[in-house]
Image (cartoon, helix red, strand yellow):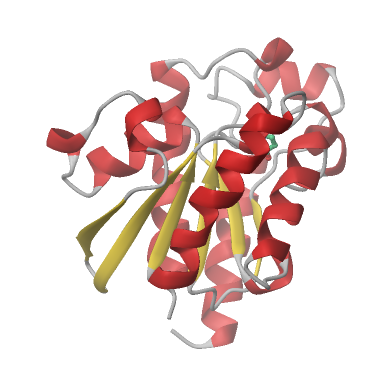
Amino acid sequence: MAEDARREALKKIKDEVLALAESPLYEYRIQNHYFPVIGEGSHYAKLMFVGEAPGRTEAQTGRPFVGAAGRVLEELLETVSMDRKEVYIANILKDRPPENRDPLPEEIAVYGPFLDRQIDIIQPSVIATLGRYSLGYIMRKFELELYIQPISSMHGKSFAAKAPYGDISVACLYHPAVAVYNNGMKETLKKDFQIIKELIK
Ligand code: URA
């Protein structure tokens, strides 16, 4: 898909989410003067990150991973000599859940199709899941549900899958927020992140 077509298709997603009054999180967004957070990065990214949902800073700015977890993600990207501009960063939920609570199944059902469309537009060859919700969503989407286990035994592993546009790898990572107050986890994340280097070769 040409650059213009990609930009248009992504813009359409943004417009639809902006007007998504049927979402269970729409009222909360409006009341708090929040923005939906669609995603950002290269429209030709080989590597796409899928987080869970925007936090407060993200909802205030409309940009993914710009708070404390975002700083960890940028640090991790540096360890594989990458910059956030060359990857694409999205979330399953496009609106912030109250008090950052876990996403509800009905919220995932509402926002999941927008993530599906982002994947089809950008066509990444590696999808890195951040945290257990995006792990569950992406593994099910690519018919890998048989391999789902607790994230404590899946982190740092990758799985081959078939997307409509070609072969892909799903890389399973802990959510960077786990390292915000726990430096030990940061070491684990850095180690796990090295699989990305292998996969995007
Ligand atoms: N956590 C997420 O899962 N996504 C963000 O965009 C920010 C924090």
